[in-house]
Length: 484
Image (tube, rainbow, N blue to C red):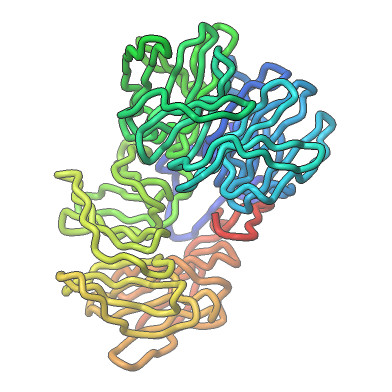
């Protein structure tokens, strides 16, 4: 079992506090495309981790096969050719790779936009695009030539050849399943009104199985001849893909919470446990309930049980602030939302911001670090936005007991206080200061560069190390040419 994404880093320690985990580590840092390899192990593409792992379906043991420091940046789906080559849809940089059985990588194409679903039919390779107006194409590995088979996909994803020889694929945004011949011709609609279809698969008996990416984890079985359907709810939120083992048992992945789960009509069995992708922002409300911005969802938990993996809302969640019975979230999609745990309703507050990150609750609304725009903004109860300060790269925000505003800027290496039109430096010379909070008359800042928690006395300005050897920031080896 992997205990940390920072192997060999050391144990977090503090002379002031005791520290313990609230939740177990996630064995798979996300799980997207899955398929069985020539060695009978289940191979898992991990989009957020930038790596590919192999899982022993019996023991659940996980081995990293394609590490994050290799040429593949954001693998989302994978398939094996007849010669044992692994083909990889590298979605963010929009590349398709071949990894030979001896581990050599060859870039096959950069001409397929948002490549996602990928499958092999004998020696032939097919890819679809996860975008509005996407395509299903055949990619000729030897030349890089692209042959378009279908267009107009409403967000393609995991696809597979059916017993009739056609390629079956989802239109994620319209709830449809379509098929097209590998040799071309007019695509045909197979089914509509399918719940949030994300993956189309066939079991060993030839049954058509469609996975939902929704919260309840619906699996729909469709008879291709009669159209007759049956559904089950698996409880696996944010499913991404499925594979059938030699006994025809279905194993599913989850982009929302990782892991691998065996599912059938009688229930589920955990093969590899699910967990957190991040987390990014973390907050606790007045009752002590913990909320974590975990990229694809907002995760909530309990300080006593340590349960931090129940999805309650989704959408690239990063910054989190909790109070007054509500949870406020910033999203990497550029919006700020308010979530009511009692009603499960989400209220959109502001859209089209540039990388909003840190968020805090004020007496009159919300304080937000709009990192991409280089400014700090205030959002009032009517959702009006007021810029209050400009900084090179603000990351997180906090308020003290008197309501004064504090901001970390990791490019400045400083913490500043905003008072009207005045910006005062409280501490500088810090190495990538990011997360910030206040307790009594002290600021606490996560200094990512040194991987420590720094305390700053507001009365004297004295800076001390409150905790060290913290596994924060990007793990070793993870690289991004563009944000995932």
